[in-house]
Figure 1 (cartoon, rainbow, N blue to C red):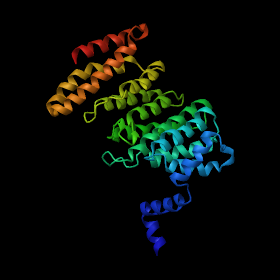
Figure 2 (cartoon, one colour; figure 1 turned 180 degrees about the horizontal axis):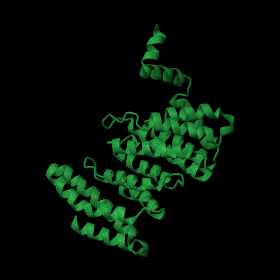
Figure 3 (cartoon, helix red, strand yellow; figure 1 turned 180 degrees about the vertical axis):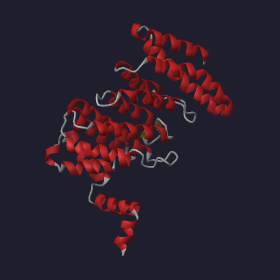
Figure 4 (cartoon, rainbow, N blue to C red; figure 1 turned 120 degrees about the vertical axis):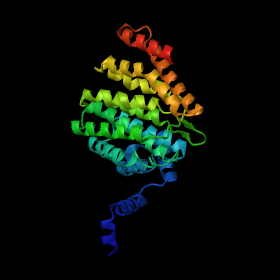
Length: 299
């Protein structure tokens, strides 16, 4: 009877199954010790059950222990995937599935909860897997398209755009997702017709009015934009958005209170100023630079 109820409720069944599986994975303190030993050279990856260890890293990817989360878990993923290429393509594909389907939007409906760390460090893992695919070509074109859809859906839904969170460390959802998008737009299997959609999604992030970007978010957002410009994005797509920006801010001024309007203007100016600096003196961006200058004068 109990099993019948579980099968009838997929959410309950999923939570019950995860509880059973997670019970056998390493606790934070155990994982931290093993990763510290590996990091210090006292142990090697080959001495450990790598699949079990990676699964435990996924379980704690958003740990509130910044040493474990930033340096040990992410640092280990960086070494395993980016530097040494030690994980099988099949495992990386599974990790990408888990990231996109279960972790990337975990707690997205909550307001500034600690689950933001799970989402943002999942973004960094996605960036690493896409980097490896750009080098080794093991993901299908359909998987890349699916990744694009889910990444943009997450970007539109993410409202917690805090940078550094006191005590708990870096959340930095915008910067981390920009890193993932940069690897995505470098992928030759991505349909370049998606560039316009991606630019609009990044632009909409700049237009948020609840949190001032003071941790170089504007510069990180520009990285994938410049990558797309190098890979065939028409400058006119950017020019159109910049030409519309002053009018957009005027409309927003009528809709927002003073504080939120000031945040919005600050974010937009920071973004346009960074864009101005990075296109200055580059002949191939002369027309774009002129438009950026006109936009800045109008703000």
